[in-house]
Length: 337
Image (cartoon, rainbow, N blue to C red):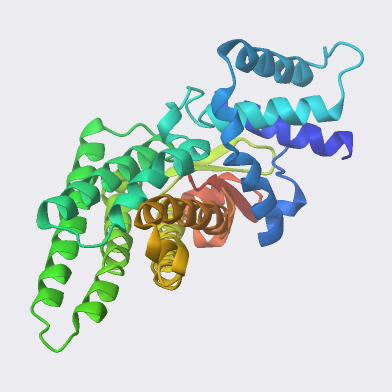
């Protein structure tokens, strides 16, 4: 990796966390391609960063600060700088500069979210279990959305509560409604009914995820988000950019549950016919959990790689006052995750 590329990325994330000013906007060119973003987000969701100590985090932040100031001690390699950047990026919010709580980091999404997914996909759900698992899932999603939002503009905590209540209500309503319809479908055989019930969580979760994002980040639409020029300076606050950021995040949240909630029922329907699982029913739940974990591990980096975190938009699509404030033709904004 060229040293100038390393400088560009480190400088970008450091300054964004502090004052939204960077020496040069420039996530690696690989961020312009899906495969490049996929490799990047594999680092972002790496659960090993959950075990980083406070001392190691501070050392990483200090190392990056010294790099920015040009006072690195001799012998520090690019690999050490990239590792420090990975640690900081996984733990520190790029806008607020504050630590994200462990269960709500992107690196914690899979380990903390997989047990909930297993619960969502358990067969023979009762009304109470459906309400419990859907509520728990949206509680986790709401916290992840809030902790990984674009925070360039302050938003009242009431928006978080509003988004949470809206998401839980929509998820539970859709899931319970679909289950009731299936139970009343007399034409379905018991086996078919059980199979169809396994797919109920997907439309419930997908719609609730969109509701969650829109309600919780609604203030961005009314207040706008910061857009940055080529040098990383804030050139204005744009509601148009906020709409783009919200739309991209909502699409991500629609795609995310698709492999997680669609693949395990298909795989498990086949695996449960195997003689081993027929004889040892106690193995079904552990196997189901492993299938869900694998689906989650595939779905998360695929979904969040659909759009760059630092997205770009043409100035002529934004408000006139922003076009007048900069000579740049393209500006950058933090989409959030």
